[in-house]
Image 1 (cartoon, rainbow, N blue to C red):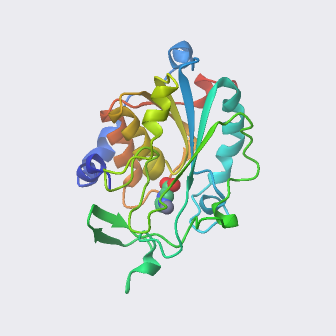
Image 2 (cartoon, helix red, strand yellow):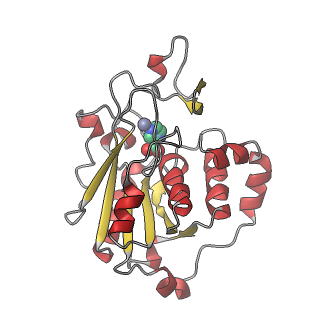
Image 3 (cartoon, rainbow, N blue to C red):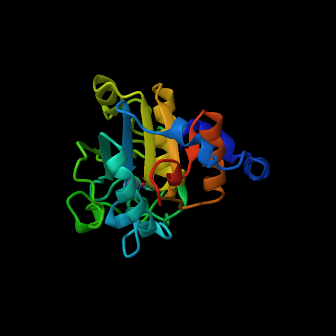
Length: 243
Ligand code: VGL
Ligand code: ZN
């Protein structure tokens, strides 16, 4: 669990109230402020068969974001794609822990770990990118969660908060200052990626309608509050690409 998310999860009832009064979605007038430029990158998180209808850990309505992402892509000179990429018997799988069921938690050396159904195993069709995702100009695929004993929701660093994926250095070497995060799932890999993007100093947008959530025990409200608190700007795809 991301430390700032963990702290916030203990406040879920308060947060639910807080988000009910959160600022409304950015109006069309903010289109220019949200517009990507040559120093912007789109980060497409985990749009894989495992996380959509028919996959091993399906996120409700996950496929609905694919046409949106395809429509956003031409607005970006720089696109990075991530893939959740686990070993068979990965430590984040409930099946690797005697007596544990999916969606329960366990204590790992790096903190509390939600246990998932087996998902996104390296090289499987389940781990492949969704076929209809059309990102012909994407330049980098970051695979994460491939160390047997450590999960990695974030595209920037593993859940031990020590092991870097190299993404921040890559983006900085390419002159990127602003990132736009889309994909699955809002409250896990998208949120952790956006929070770490802020930590690494990027101006950070999450394009909310191009994400879908798992929403486990209030995790969606907690993640939205954590992102807003960290300065992540939550926008709609209409601020960037005409519907
Ligand atoms: C994810 C749970 C487990 C995600 C990955 O992509 O949000 N969620 N592994
Ligand atoms: Zn995973």
